[in-house]
Image (tube, rainbow, N blue to C red):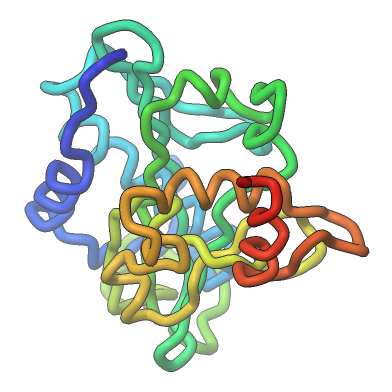
Length: 247
């Protein structure tokens, strides 16, 4: 098994060095026209991914053997770091973003019906068992209201209003941000905790179990039913369900 590296320390230092208040305003074409962007969440999410991956890979390069990005939209993770040494020798990094709602925010943290379950190979670049750690680089921002797409000349760059502001970044392992509730909508995704303060501190639901937290997180979501009726719907229900099986 490969020795892991201090992902959190390395990336926090890198983002602090370059800053994350990115005033991305649009796309420039060959005729020097700028196609401005709105605060559409899917578009903003892709921009964070495009801007942050070069920062991440440059920061970790001295500590890893190689890295690979994932071009397929439904395949996890966004970035795989490959370490020297025998398997498991990979680190997963997923890039997430969300906007603030008062003192609340939240991410979806990937599927609980795919690669978390046997044979651990569905919708994931490598087998889940080949990964040492699973990290989230999360960007939290304020949306700027009433920003509409338009086409302007590059000479008007300073007049273009960026669609987001007050950007901050957090770097925590997935299990440290996870809650015991699915993400929004009908998709089978893990939901994060929603308190901004808790997200910043990486004190998600499963951190209450200390060193056992990651194992309990994986077991909880590996056995969480997608359809009703469910064996359990929260952590207390899981502990009640699991207790007889642990005897």
